[in-house]
Image (cartoon, rainbow, N blue to C red; front, side):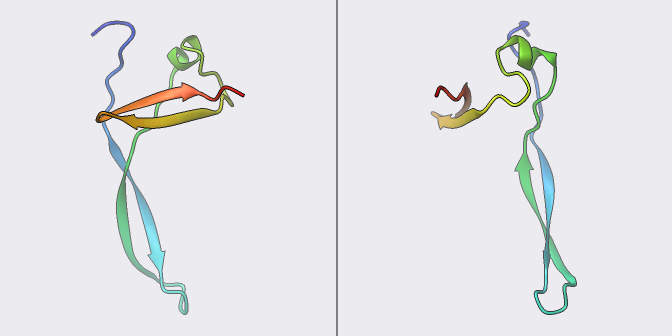
Length: 68
């Protein structure tokens, strides 16, 4: 794997659903989640607080900084 590539695995986050009347948990759903982190993001131009656009193009995720 080249320095310009990283391997990640899609995980999940649990979302709790509750009964509006009793506020008791009725069930949980699992949603796919991908958490990117590391100094390589800053080196690639994605420092802390950089706004980004995530696009789905031909079955790939493309992350671009927002150009204002």
